[in-house]
View 1 (tube, rainbow, N blue to C red):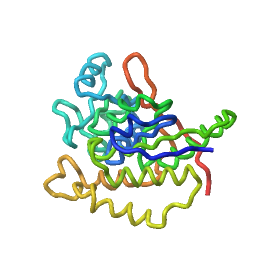
View 2: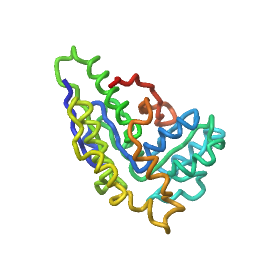
View 3: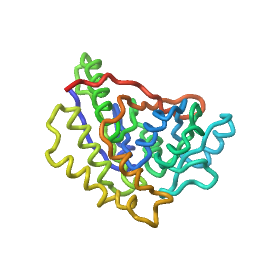
View 4: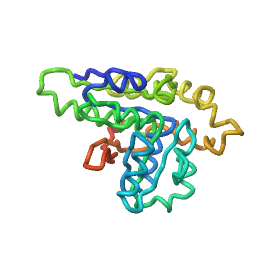
Length: 247
């Protein structure tokens, strides 16, 4: 049995318990999935800009990637745009990525009560659900419901965002083996009229390319989860392949 709950924003990350999924669709954790697909060796989520810069001095040939308010951090190689990085993916192939964002990576840092942390996005949502169900089945002999916290991080961790809420609802439905809400596809496509609107603003294309929107709303693209662990340098986003259920 799984006790799956949805939380919201930074305060939700602080309340999260058990297996926790920190969700950031636009764009942090969609990007991290794409980064592994582009051939990076490792992604390290980092809370602060200063910490990321210090780590870059400790890890030779690492690449700084990140944003604040959606804008690339000054001095960083890339912002938070999967489509822009894709154009120059040879620059990151085989490299360690140091990644800091306004919402997603902040959620990781604030989820101090979590027993295990995954990152969450639409592009690997089904893999996340399958991983959760496998972990729950392994823990069945404990005699109590397996706790799962889905944290929709929203905009800068302070304001709800429709894409993260939708992703959390979708993962919850999959975990609980319930039917996907009939309006799911309509809501997914309508994201362009909500927080996705910035990706269609001609004046914002330098920071929010239109292609990012389409890359981030793709559904169940990657058959792996990104699990967070810690080592002596900080957080590590570890790629774990999941055998997806057929049908």
